[in-house]
Length: 336
Length: 96
Image (cartoon, rainbow over all chains, first blue to last red; front, side, top):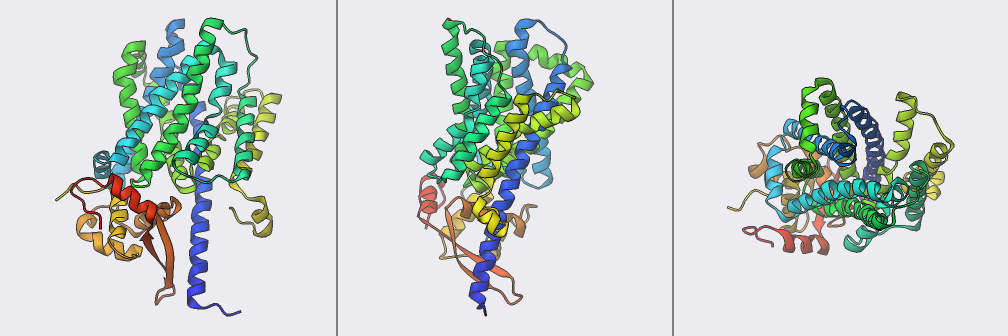
């Protein structure tokens, strides 16, 4: 069969676009893997923080950790973008509406969702709060369907659902009798977290149609870190924790290394979201729960329980369904 | 002169002013504005174009092979891309 120049060019273009999407899928998986690494490293860094009383443990320490994680990640990304000659792009982007939307995304995904997550756990108990917050990829997919008109095929929905169920199985803790007064308020805060993370992805993807994802994520991390440092930490007494950490070089270094994993992960997540769409990007990022289990078992010698194995398998099957169209995979070994 | 746009935004804007353009043609046109920057590479431009195509704001309906047999994709703006530009292009920038 002879192929004319034009047909050959069309085939080459199709291949280029397919490879680009395939790369997006791997970027999404990589973001999940590095986020799992960040969770484990952040856990290690937190274990090095001196004990400062029970009340500090609930809000001050987690929020101080979130602030340091985002701020340090923002600084790592400044180094990266500086090296690539993109520092000017940050200011240029901030002057445009899409760039400003990335700042709003940062506040939704950073302080609001993180705060809601912590309040949800403390008021409603982890059993319910973690189950609700694990729904964030579904929230993101729904919002992207509504606001970005992104099409989501049934296969991706099923995969995402399996991943979410897997994440819930992994983080399952037996429920304790809820304190009725604060219980529902806790559920509300947990829902706010899921909504915040979902909305972050959608707003960021909107912004990234016009600005560079590598710049967008830098803006996101710096905005979130700065907001937490200036407005949230003073309220919860978080600065006492941060100043303690700064006196301990080992602990400070641990936070900085964890933040490097966060920077790499977020960079990959934003890139994947814009390349393959919010639904797939979020579902593949959601594999972090499984990666977290794998890293904990390898590096921290955590016991591998039945729940962890079953949950991780569900996440794996779900993510595979999201990423690969079985029909095409078996036909030609191509990723849809 | 209006503020310099972020590169991706400017690429979208440039494509809106012509019928169609390849990465090479866009680079040639934007060289006076961004040519001295380290990010001014073919790889960066191609990535912006592929991302905007994946986000359904550019179309890539026209392709050909150049003299060396290498693929050249011509991108054109579609209705969604125009809608975004109309809404979010900063003041001082004209939309054609």
